[in-house]
Image (cartoon, rainbow, N blue to C red; front, side, top):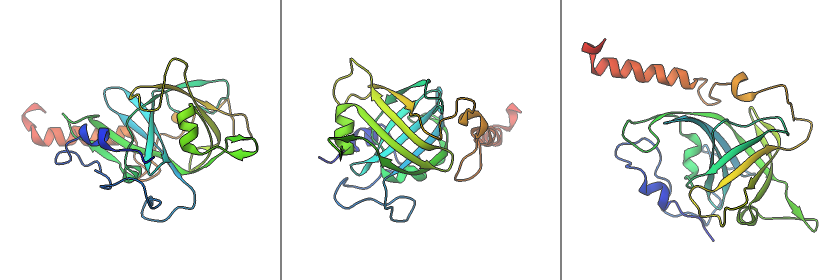
Length: 221
């Protein structure tokens, strides 16, 4: 069953936001990302300074980017469990989006592509790989991320009390699995704050927003 972008589109006015509307139809042929064909499905993590700072983890599943908002960002410590709140599916084109969502629009504020790459589905049952849609439906995802910043195995586990996969605010846990890439001493969020696309940080985009505001309202300087 193909996933839908209807909730994503209802929340946005594409005449006012530079965010991509996405393809008219979802499903069918394997989508492409960043303008080139991918042998493996992609992931992207976007740092987003909306009303509250958070990191949006997005996994390509069923022709869209299935998304979770992670308030504190990913951890490399297997003992640390990060809250990951499921949000609406985003179009594949969103993996390239970086910039400022205009004031008054849903999620207003700067966004950077904090990390991106491909992933491999790790979850097996009876010596067979469990499909990603099934992992999503069952509330347990295990993937190996091959990013520019993050590498290694991570698990997403839906918390008890959340039923189904269509709840717009279902709570999950993002956990680093034990492997050679686990590192309890390093915090990737603080040690690598820059965009892997442009090299800019959220702070850089906020400064740009201040300059634009001052140009529109020079009397307030």
